[in-house]
Length: 96
Image 1 (tube, rainbow, N blue to C red):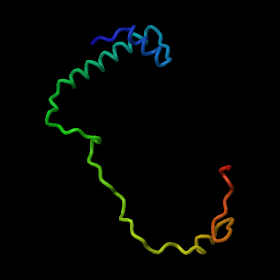
Image 2 (image 1 turned 30 degrees about the vertical axis):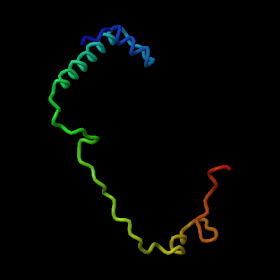
Image 3 (image 1 turned 90 degrees about the vertical axis):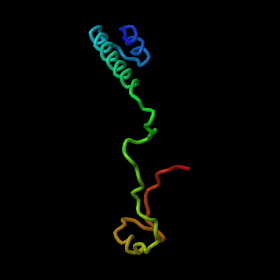
Image 4 (image 1 turned 120 degrees about the horizontal axis):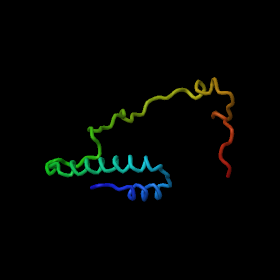
């Protein structure tokens, strides 16, 4: 399919872009090349290819969620600039 400068202008208007006449010609050629390549890809036999969401196999890489002892509260608060009632005290960031 041949993309014309009119097609490029339509895309430019919809995307609120402006192109010089030289750029219009250049983009018309580039868009035509892209569509020609898509036509070649359409001809590839993919009947036996299963659909995929990722190019590579994905797997969960997280560790098992196991309950175990944590750091002691007093040790965690030891270097805190401010603490109150066994918790870190921080500035309020959300208004009610």
